[in-house]
Amino acid sequence: MGSLQGIVGRRNFQLETDRDRLIFAPSSSKSTIFVKAYLEANWTAVTEFILLGFQGGRTFRIVFFFLLLMTYCATLYGNLLIITLVFYSKTLQSPMYFFISQLSMNDILLTTDIVPNMLYIQSTDRGAITFSGCIAQYYFCGASEIYECLLLTVMSYDRYLAICKPLHYPSIMNSTYCRTLVAITWIFSFSVILISTILVSQLSFCKSNLIDYFFCDLAPLLEISCSDTYMIQLDASILSVPIIILPCILIMASYGNILCTILRIPSVSGRQKAFSTCSSHLLVVSIFYGSAFSLYTLPTKRESMSMVKVLSLLYTVGTPLVNPIIYSLRNKDIKMVLCKKTRKKHLS
Image 1 (cartoon, rainbow, N blue to C red):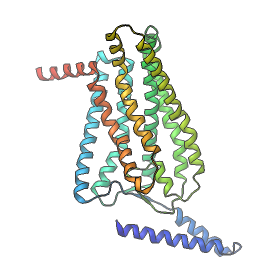
Image 2 (image 1 turned 120 degrees about the vertical axis):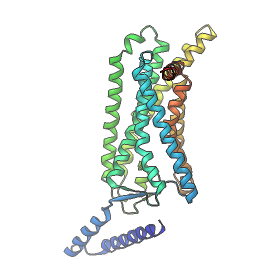
Image 3 (image 1 turned 90 degrees about the vertical axis):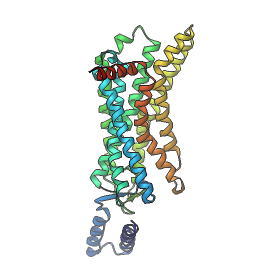
């Protein structure tokens, strides 16, 4: 890895030296124009990136590899279990469980987009990823994160209707309306991130092809780019309004109304029952947005890069593992269906 960094560094130094010569060369010279075009072609021709991942000794890499593998297997198992239970069980055919199954599908997409390549990075000294593979990973990861933000907002709206408008809930949250909301959320998520992905794919990379991260995220790519990133940063700032700020406001408004409604319930048992129907979702929202805000508000300095990686790991790998655990352990209906299925298997 050290020799590879040296080669890349010497190449970048040579390119920067050649570019400096061109700046002070006569612009009217035809040979200068041809040389400049040649250098710019070499300057932007990045065919692959080197993801450094989590650096450490051989023992650390082996232990981390197996922990990551077990986490990935547990995430797939937990989320597939919820999807299967919701799909086949008649008692779980309600909007809330339909949205939970959609969240599990998204968790599988997010971890599958990131973890297999992380396992490859930890098992080899050279975690290379092609340019097109890096762009594709950025696209699916971004779409998955946007979808989760929007889906959690839809789920909070569902809980608001169930608790604050119980008489109108069945007529509003019918199966057609639920599927329409989910379809719009999927389409919006995969369409919006496409703009950012196209802008990122047009970047030129001249500083280095080494990414001190474990997947292709926006900030590490902008850090090694030599292009003007104003349009990409402007796009990210504009998109933060409908993707992050507005959903946060809607979620807080929904739970503010839910809390007021619960406090007006006269009996203690009634308040506990009402709160239990939304406590799991509130916990998932707190973990997701808490880790996201901690990640993106932390300064991306070199001395804090390890902390950024850890928070990002919790955000992208830990959350999909925790979500099915929260919904299965804190939900009586899912536990009851799971016990029935397990009992049937033992009897058969």
